[in-house]
Image (cartoon, rainbow, N blue to C red; front, side, top):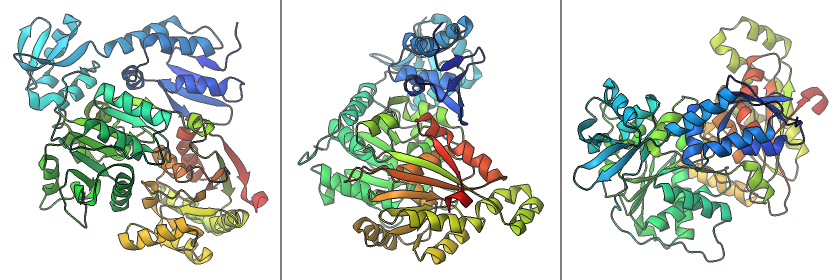
Length: 545
C-alpha cells in the first residue's frame, strides 16, 4: 500500500500531512477542486464541494483527472462512494446548456430530458422560461439569462453558457510590447478566458493581472468598461494601459468621485457606482452608456451586491473577473460563478514564485502577551469588543518596532484596521498614515515617495488591501485585520510579492495577542496562504525582541 500524504474520507474531507515529502505536489494536484478548511501545523483539512468541483470542470479538469489525483496521493483506499459521488456531481455541469437558436433566440437545451423536465417544473424558474421548442429545448427570455443561471445553480444543475456574446462597439486596441512581453502564464490565462468567453482568472498579487486584462482588451478590440476598487487603482490601470497598449490619454476615461468621463475605455470605481442618491443607484447608468464589448471586474472577490444585480443583465457582454482569491467571506462565490463566470485559470502562487515571477516570502506570526491591565479589560469587555481590544494591544508597538529595526535595508508596510492604533504607530515610528479619508493626491504623493525610496516606512489602513502597486515593499507587518478574513490575508501578502531586483525574499509578519480571539482569527486568516503552500513560523515576541 502506498504511503501517500492524503487521507480521503467518505464525508468529503481530505486530510493532508503537511510534512510528508509529497505534500507540496499533492497540494498542487488537489488545489483546482478542493477547498482548504483548516491548516494547523501538521494536518491540513480540505473539503470537496459541488461549487469547487464545478469550477474545476469549467476550467478543464474532468472527473477522471480529479479521481486520479486522489488515487495517486491517497494513503488508504479511497471510498468508492466518494468517487462515485464526485463523478456524478461533476457530470451535472453541462447537462443543461444555454444556446442561441436560429428561430427562437435564447434557449435552454438539455442532453438529459429528465433534468429539463425537473427544472422546468421548479417555481424558482417562473417567468424565466417560456414554451418548449421540442422535448429537449425550452425558450429562455433573453433578459433572464443571468438570473436563470443563478437559479439553476441553486437547483444543483449549473448551466454551461454557449449562447455567445455581442462584439460591442469596435475600438482598435493593440499591445505595445516594446521592451516587454506577456509571461507564459499570462498568455495561458488570456487563452483560457477567451475560449470560455467569460469567467475569472486567479493570479497572485504582483503577478500582472492588469496585463492579463490589457491582453484580453487587445483580443476583444472593443470598447471596454473596467471596474476597480478605488481611485488609486483607477489611476494605476490608466498608467498601465497607456504604457502597455496603443491607447491614448483621450481614449481612456475615469468615472470616479473626482471625474465622470465616458470614453471608449472607461475605468470606474465600485464606490461611485454603488453610491445612492435618494435611494437610487444613479451611476449604474454607466453600464448602458456605451455598447461595451468587454467588462473587466478587478478584485472580483470584492464585488458589491448592486454590481452583481446589474451584472445579471450583462450576460451578452464578455466579462472578465480578476482576483488573487475566489474566497468571499460573504459566501457569494456562487454568484461570481453564475454572473461573472466560472474560474477559467488559476496558477498556484508557489509555482509562479519558483519561476521567479513573484518574490519568495517568509511568513512569521509574532505572538505578544497582553499587559495585566489590558488582560483584565479583555476579560471584562463585551464579546463584540474583544477582538478590537486584543488586536489594538499596546504590547504590539514594541514588536513592530523590533521588526522594523531588523530590516534596515527594506521598505516596510504596516497595515491595520483600527485608526487609533495606526495613529499610535505613526507617532511611535515617525511614519505617515494613509487611511480612507486621505485625499487621493496626498496618497499618490506618499506612494511616490515610497517607490523612490525617500520614504522607508508607510502605515496603511484597509485601503492597503486593494490594488496598490508598491513593488519596492519587501516587508509587511499586519497588526490588525477584518476578523478572520482569508481574502484580506491574501491581499496583504500580495503587497510584497513583486520580485526584487537583487532577488531577495520578502517577509510577511502578523503580530497577534496570545490567549485571545486575535489568535483564533489569525489561524482562520492563514488558511488561504496555507493552501498556496506558505507556512507560518510562530515566534514569541519576548524571544523575538
